[in-house]
Amino acid sequence: MSREVKTKGFRVSPGAKVRLDDVDPADTSQFDGSKSDGLEGVRALIKRLDPLQELLYAEHKHSVLVVLQAMDTGGKDGTIRRVFEGVNPQGVKVTRFGVPTPEESGHDFLWRVHSHAPEKGEMAIFNRSHYESVLVERVHGLVPKEVWRPRYGEINDFERELTEEGTTIVKFYLHISKKEQVKRLQDRLDDPTKHWKFSMFDVRERKFWDQYMKAYEDALERTSTPWAPWYVVPSNHPWFRDLVISTILVKMLEDLKMHYPKLDKAKMDLGQ
Image 1 (spheres, rainbow, N blue to C red):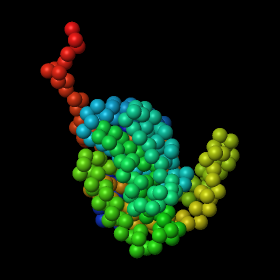
Image 2 (image 1 turned 45 degrees about the horizontal axis):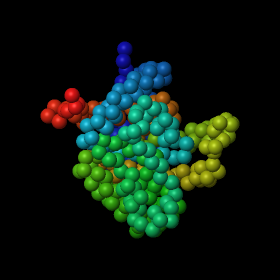
Image 3 (image 1 turned 45 degrees about the vertical axis):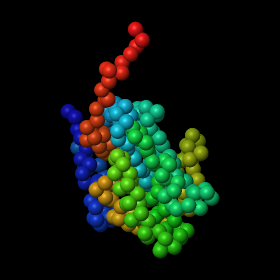
Image 4 (image 1 turned 60 degrees about the horizontal axis):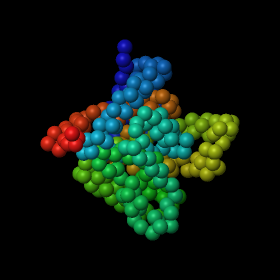
């Protein structure tokens, strides 16, 4: 018997108040199956995602932007690795936004994002994103409040512009607990194959956990719009995280009602 996860409750309604303390990062109650059922569901959804992404590329009419945000160790890399493992890399572009370069810092905060927006037929995945400018820069006081506060509106306008040009946007906040973060950091220390992932910067950032939660709440409240919704995904359990995200992506792509382009027989000439 097939089991489906209920995803409606994870979507942040425009204008709704967000309190992350009220969201259990370990919650899997919206799925009535076991972990093995969930993993089987993810595999099935990945098989559906592959031809949909190929259809997106072939039709060359729509584009898709997937935004992934999370605290350190939140699972952004794992999501990309697992959910998108079967797609054709020719039509998918992953961009990771780190600390702005001097050139990027010399422009407006959205300048470096524009060139990475997806082309027609393309799916772009942002591992971190333009939202860092209302998260990191706010928490660490890198810019004053009068600078970062108006950015919510600028982000909404930017995303609306993309959607009006044919881009479908979906944004995921991967919600983990502070305790789970410690566990994952320790795992990176204990496993030699994960030493390269460990950074003392991630440890130092834990001191700002509460400030980040407040910054995320404000961002989710102010920028979850009808044209670019946010989903808060409980992510302590990677299998559940992947199940929720793949379910949303598959439905979103199916709702585009895409079709393969028809062959123009009048242009057919095989030279025979």
